[in-house]
Length: 101
Image 1: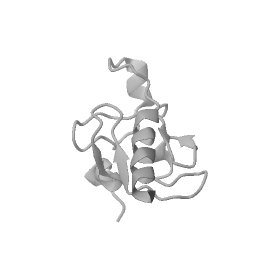
Image 2: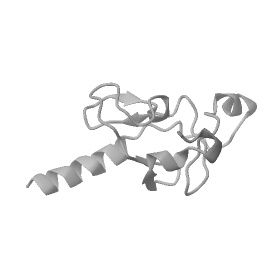
Image 3: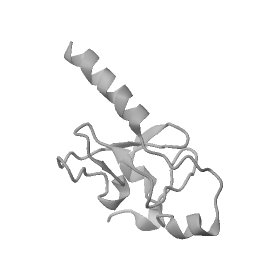
């Protein structure tokens, strides 16, 4: 039962990702980009206005806290791209010159 509940919760979280829904970039979008951060799969760059949702219900930009939910302090080690839907290690989103040492 717990395994099924976790799978359902993960599916719901995936569906609840908040996305701007606009894939055409303008100069304003480029200014809003988070420098040095991109999806390791499709290379999409999130902006400051892109949001993710934690299982606790908190909605925030995961890159502002390096994957830690400000609501419950859960550390998300995987992040889902809101453009291609792929899950990858959160740290892989940071370009090499932006990686923690």
